[in-house]
Image 1 (cartoon, rainbow, N blue to C red):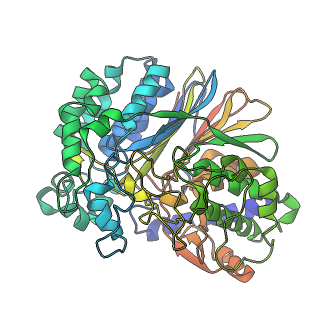
Image 2 (tube, rainbow, N blue to C red; image 1 turned 135 degrees about the vertical axis):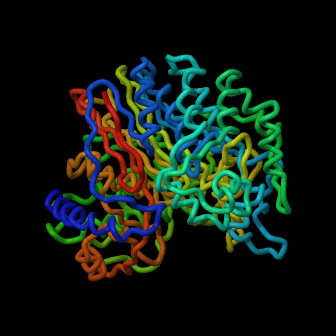
Image 3 (cartoon, rainbow, N blue to C red; image 1 turned 120 degrees about the horizontal axis):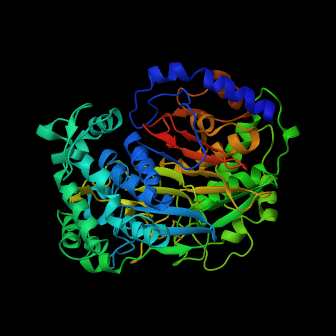
Length: 580
């Protein structure tokens, strides 16, 4: 397998410079050559914008913990990458400490007034997706500030107020980069109808690269939170402003100040599985589909040995696509908020079940049609109907480790680029509730696991991941994650295969061209990122091959057994990895 993967990898990287010249989608790649490696011995952060990574590193230099650095970096990302994340959204975090691994669910919740059919139009059909996004119904109760509170209370070293300085300074004025400018241009028509027009379409034109963007409203909000703490977000005037922003317009939402006051972060058990005997891969369980989908892809591939791959031929990516096809079939049927529906997590990752799923894959022939979900052990509850609702990329990921070994993989999101387009306090509000199924029941009349309910958290694809070596279980080996909508589990699984099976460094793994099969009628290759021979080889096996832009944003840290740190940032975005 190493020989095959090396040949495909070298051929893929060989076409990257040309791809950089032809890639026109600002949400996708801006450059394809792997970025220079960051290495260090004490601490490291990898984040989606240089200013955020720098804020995190400076926090670490001042004696802050990885939790402090993550908070400072995410606050900066709210300023300089506002279309992807911010305090108007939510997050999942995996945290490794001396006590082991913990996971924190700060996913947005549906308000108390939400109804199962709230995304159905009066004619009985589903609302158009963009109409739903722009409506007040799309906004869930934000969880990111409560996550900051939980991380700081558990692991913070610096004073809470000290974490806001870099973000406040940038909110007073920063130079717009190419990605934000490109996305403002791409989404100008949608932004023109939203609160966000004032900030991102000054004078009616999209904000330009190199222009200075000032957001005094956000600076004021950050100052208030620094002075008064997290409660200033979830009660008082700001909570009222958030609720009011969701209740405007013809299709108003029901989010209330009471919903904000009731929000809580939930600490859940991490979901882990063993890969290739020597690795333990841990991720976020429901309402995230990350750990189960990444785990199923790896678990199915674990049943294929290196001798099953013909060097120089595309069998690895064929098998990857087939494994993904099966994993996404199970994801559509079973995954939802486990506080509301029974999710057979243990069964989905059961070795015997995965071995049976692997036997459905022909090593040299593509399967026909859509895969059916399997019947994992420990299934409970009523029969369910599948939900293949798409996710859209408006997300960010950072990985950070400090000198004491505290390590965090954290993925945050406002859902679609620029979220709902509605704003309060200088920040964008999420549209995460459109991650719910628009239909509460399937065509068979069975309930959908991911249907809307008051207080429920929508299914997510976010996949923050921590990998351990089984010979050094006391320290993490890899911290990883990515934005990218419903393809996130594939991006993370592909990067892990590159590092765990081939031994590539994090920068090369982050830059590797993507292959995707979400149980649809075709296999998708990332546009401009693969040699023509890969598409030809996959087509010869029987795959219907298409090309798509794929907007990953992998930010990875690898910790060698001797403590050496190596980081990689996805060249498709503006991020970097910094270390001391």
